[in-house]
Length: 165
Image (cartoon, rainbow, N blue to C red; front, side, top):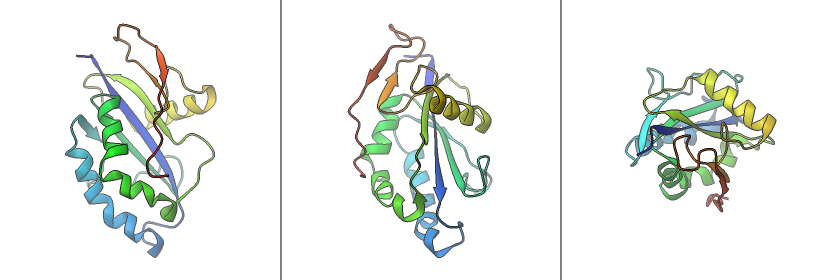
């Protein structure tokens, strides 16, 4: 077993405020999707405030939501994102969020038990945007093995196409 776990950050630019009618279905599904994540095999931790989600945190701007979590490995996160009920919500993301020209999802390895903070996560996203996929910051299409793997830093391409598109 690896001494590392996978951290992930994804961000989204809202097309309206959380209180707006445009965002009502998204807000209405948050509790369900968060419970689905927490009940998924390989889930470790997710960022949340006392309200139970992270929608009140806006480190990148008032209209940008952040989602930060830690998973056992890429396979566990991939299963949740691409093969669970989460896909149904992803299919509807165009109703609530603007298209983003830059990377909006970043993955990176953290030592087992480490809980990343928002500043660390945002720095990883900026690194991915500046340098492209590396062992320090990557996405689902260019995955890197954890530092304690037989071939640490070894990157490999995947054919993960989002089933929601």
